[in-house]
Image (tube, rainbow, N blue to C red; front, side):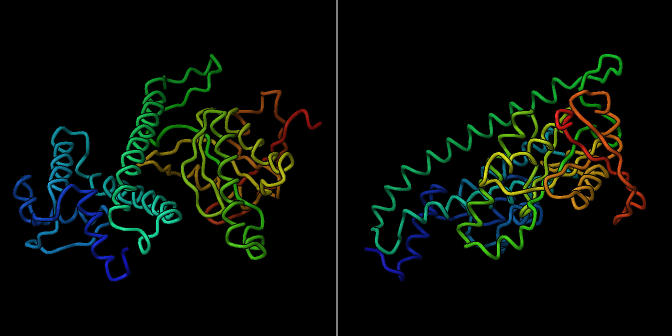
Length: 336
């Protein structure tokens, strides 16, 4: 059986299993093979979130060399802009670091390196690693198809046909942006165990994803107890906001939330969205009451003709960054 003094041996086993061999190449050798300077290679390595090593330290394998070659190839064919290279590599590094931490947390529940032999651990890795790798590849391909479809189907907006097709402009793509925030999250988390907090947040994210996806929306990211999401049409973003707040009344485990929505141009960059419309949606969320949806003037103008919704203009309010923000309360017409 393995004991704690043998953990270094387990790490060596993982390294060979995941990377294919023991490290034998230095950073300078990798840089020379690809035709870039060592400083460029080190920057890419650091951008991925890995510790820097000296130029002559044999810390790399053929897998590292192939990854550096692929990165350079993408630059050479123009797929990656040199100005965006570092940001793209950082985003890849952060995304996969979080995914790996989560996956190792799950694996730790069923694998005990202190009681299992190295052969047993090798057998588990031989079964789990290919399965996870294949699943990740499938999910990436599916999301790539969805993203490509949105880009290819986006056509110039025709104001006369009433279509909700997104509009491309100098400031980005016009879209609906929303935030959903759990009400009194800090107070609730104090009265719950860590496991209960985790289950509450997981359920909130799971049901929210179902609601948002049902209207062809997308979750951009989660920020603690808050979701940032987008949709391509004004009706879609309005429906999402209302259904998210209504879910607490339908399901006891779903927490009470408040929502802020805005409509306008946003810059999509490396999986995130940027621009004033994002800031407006965030400010509206902080102003909203529990179980309510607030929208900005631009979204109100877009959905005002729709008989499904009712809007009520509220008093202009000064918030950080906006001297007089004009909020509108959104509800269903059927609530009358």
